[in-house]
Length: 336
Ligand code: TRP
Image (cartoon, rainbow, N blue to C red; front, top):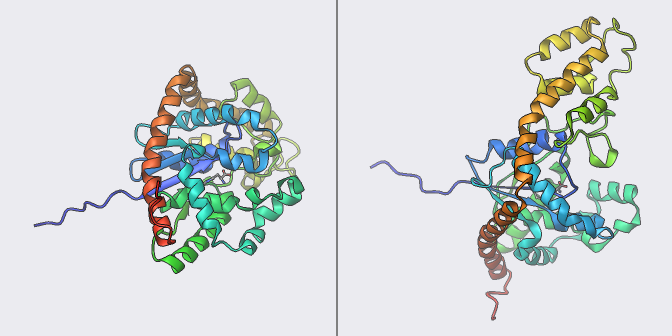
């Protein structure tokens, strides 16, 4: 008789900090993969509100509203709560308990030498030189391993965190036996989307296009995009390969991509025209998503209910893993 595979689908975990509304970089860099992988894997997608507190602990007023905005964007982007588990990180306290356990074994030097830790301290100052922020990658590791997720679809900027995560997993498994799989990042073709000024697209740089931007806002923003500085006049040959506008054509205007490339290169196509065609393509591309977003936003109660259900499912899995970690670390089951 032929053997039937009964093994469960592999798991995915990913999430984002609730920074408010998502931009095109988030969509193309991560959410597209969340959507693409939702049938092949058992997917857990969350909003990392504890992680938001590691840097924004002085402005907590906004966090709850931002969580809601993010979930709307996840769903508008096509991630389907019927097929995936959506939840909010702080609704799953088992993650915090696992974080405490892991923090026993993670050397401080590993965290201090993390490039993003050093960068952020330089950029944001000593306000974030806290115990919690130092532990950011440990918490992120817990997010992932509490579901024994093997694949983590994220943008390029998260890859160093995942390397640290694998090191922590190897250390844990080395001490206590093979409890956790080593997770790997999964990147999209557009894992590092440039912003309007040519730097990486980021809310904190103010160079983004939001999924929720009105068509006129998109057109306005696109008029100001930095293009190849070597192309000054229409007729000058440009270098599409270094131009942000061309990058957006690749994403949203694949039908005309080749013609745009050649037109820019030869000088036949001017930047003004190229930008206009690009804005219209982005507006068209985001339209269905914005329509979905409006419909979802009209029913906030449904989002809350979905997050409650998702949180309960996430906790079921998280409880099992936490019990295993307590066991191998010698604590055993709680007495009460
Ligand atoms: N660090 C991620 C970000 O800044 C958010 C995050 C928290 C995350 N925990 C995670 C991403 C676990 C992937 C897996 O967006």
